[in-house]
Image 1: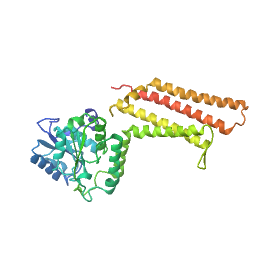
Image 2: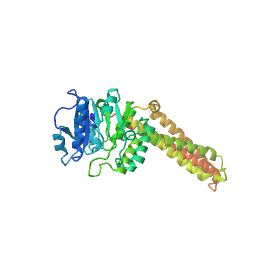
Image 3: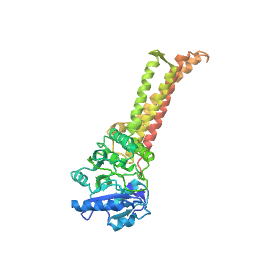
Image 4: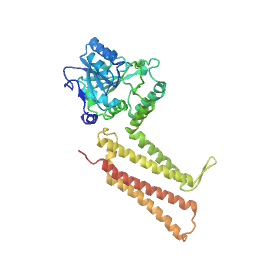
Length: 402
């Protein structure tokens, strides 16, 4: 995590000891930004769990610039504090994970919505070999008023479903804030995001790297704060959604690109010979023009899939995919050969149209027949040009950097 953590700025700690040591098994980590109303009860519950379970552990507060009495409360209740100057939920957690002394870390919000006295199932699963243990609030129970309607019935279910679809993550509550993990294994992921999307990045990156992800029921109750939460429904929901899409080039670019090309090619096969009528509806030149745009946009979409996957792999944002062998086969030279075939084919078609026009002494032509050839030719030229540009940009993003 060192590389990503350097982005957070200087991190100050209340003591000089960092890293796994002192025989500490568990760090209970709470990000904090002005949580004076609820911080004390959360720390006391976490300490009570450590005492009753007999686990050697610590309570660590990752303070993100609190201006209320949060720091004094943490001090007086025996919690350790790490100061993280850079604002953001993810930034606070990255700083806390870096400073954690435990072999395992369980993170949870300091708003008293999660039960820090009920962490034993997390510890048991971590001891059994899980890399990440997620809480599932839908299985454990959500108290009335604890989760906004849109979060409970739209945002969380939809984002969790997309997470399972895109990344095959076996969890039903993708954004539960109470989760445990192996500090060493999370460290190895080199997580980068500093906002609310950090919660998604952790699970997505772990899934892509083949980590063992487990799930336990947990409860959620209304938080004890009088002020509004830091979470913003639409802004943070969009950040989570866009993150899921950006980390899945297959679903964002590749599959839509193939669908557009298949639809455009199908229309071209049937319409190039002549007009077609289906159920009394006529399809002719105008549909062929639409087909042309579908092929061009589909080609561009697939190009973006290749570029984004290569960029992510080159910068260690994603591990090699199951399609790595196929991507490696798409060398600059091979892509240029394919682009050349498309381009030359289109130019030949265009030349044919010019000769036909010259034969008519550059006068009027058979509109339907010649326009079909011209549309197909210009589409082929455009796709060839796109493919050639993609080939060069793809090679640029793979240039080694220090």
